Image (cartoon, rainbow, N blue to C red; front, side, top):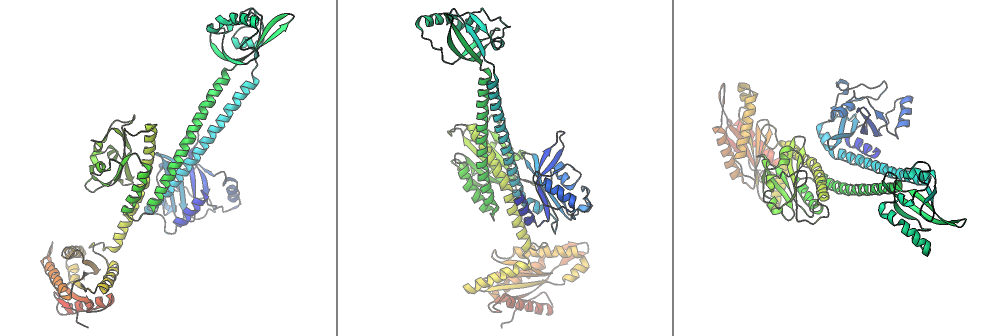
Amino acid sequence: FNGMLESLLQLTESKYGFIGEVFQDPDGSPFLKTHAITNIAWNEETRRFYDESVESGMEFRNMNTLFGSVMTTGEPVIANAPAEDRRRGGTPEGHPDLNAFLGLPFHHRGVLIGMVGIANRANGYDEQIVESLTPFLTTCVNIILSMRGQQQQSAIEQSLRESETRGRAILDNAIDAIITIDNTGRIESCNRAASRTFGYGTNEMVGLNVSELMPPSHGDRHNDYINAYLQSGRGRIIGVGRELTARRRDGSEFPVELAVNELKLEGRRLFVGILRDISERIASEERHSRLTAELTARVEELDRLNEQNEMLSELGSYLQACLTKEEAYEVLLAHARSLFDRESGALYRLTESNSMECVLAWGPERDALASAIQRTECWGIRRGELHESGSARSALRCHHFDGFSAGQQLCVPVMTQNGPIGLLTLHLPAVVKETSLDARFARNRSILAGIADRLAPTLSGIELRMRLQEDSIRDPLTKLYNRRFMLESVHRELLRARRSGAPVSVILLDLDNFKRINDEFGHDVGDQVLALLGQQLTENVREEDYVYRYGGEEFLIMLPGASLEVAEQRALQAAQAARTLSIDTDKGPVRLTLSAGIACYPDHGQTQEAVLLRADKALYEAKNAGRNRIHLAKAS
């Protein structure tokens, strides 16, 4: 955790922070115990407290703080102005300044199990940072669950050792029952332990036939056995310990360990039985066996979970490295084929029309799964949580599995904070040979849910990166490419044209009298004019052409492969289309005209700067000549 905290502070450029686990006091109140915390001690007292507590973990129970708000709400807390935040609890005198704070909870199956707190990032914190730290929080959850599993395993082992110690103590301190019988089977003497063992009062056993202490099936044959031994001298239990069943005075039976020896005393033949009630020992062995089986099962479960976590961690690592959704789909398909080698499954993408489009499928029934499904056909996507059918828990089958063979089905929605973005499905046919189908199904449920948890932030992150990239090259008003992207793309097209020997033409257009439109009709109408003109220019170019907002009311069209004459025709068409536009306002209609300057590579320059300069000069000449006209750049 110390290493993770150090990496987290470096990653987020934060000054200090902590990682802690959430526990509860006997009254149910939550408190935080740190596993890693930055040393921000500011005086001798706090330094001593840090040194004494850092190894075992510091405990914090005051919930009237920013990090306390994370624990009580279970939600992230972003405080970029802590001093003004109503959730603050204040800081002790001398405490380092708190300029910004981010608290992130992490849960397991809906239960808060810990949190991360970091502070004093120079530019504060935002939702993008929160989303980017999802894999980090997942790692914290896995580590704490592993720690708890190890603690639980240690507790079971300790319980088993204590059980064994108790069993040995019972056996070591037991007082054996000793009974002496004559050659007729009558009891001549017994000790107190024998009386207690069989439930008789002191000396009540003397004079009884020993067969009274045996179950009827054995007692009826006991006298015959003694007579046979006395005649032959051969006995099956004389001098040999055996485990038998005895009977108490109340008729209840119990197991005993019995050793019998013959004793000759004053010419008489006596038999001494040393008997031990082994009920506790047998019960202890049964408990030992049960605990051993439970421990073995838990160890096997931990091994399975560790193996599963390793596979999911590897998948998560590959997903984090993906740059596009297609790469993410390829990574998921490769791992799904390995993880679910007996099942068929698919990933669906939620479209704008609320249908579910299949983006990948695997397994014997992949062709049937490849068809699009409707959102209303799946209980999992409608409820926003895992749905299973074909098991003892649920017989309610999703309609998109109609027509599939009998078996078990899983549907796991791929969820983000804004709702579902996709669906993972899995089908295990009933014909699959498996020692324990329930265990297989539980494994599939756990792994598929883990995949969904890792896939959601990956797809959201890729979507966010694509949206940010698109926003960085688009003008927000007209939705056309901006000047920054223009410089990159024009340069790229000129390099391509230089290799192929093809021309590249540029048309630089200017909306005439735009200042008058703004002054007379208002800037809102001016913005509307620019947006409408940008849309019209886009609709009237080839697919391979580019339309840019050059700046202000100026636009630029790049025509790869077009000659100067072709560009002139396109400019005339654009100007004519602009004249047909009319925007109605309270002050009357707005009419538009365009002026344009056209230049062509390589006729008017070998670089983008030269070509754009010649187009700009041609535009300048067109506007000076009275506007609403098109001028071609002059030959060099």
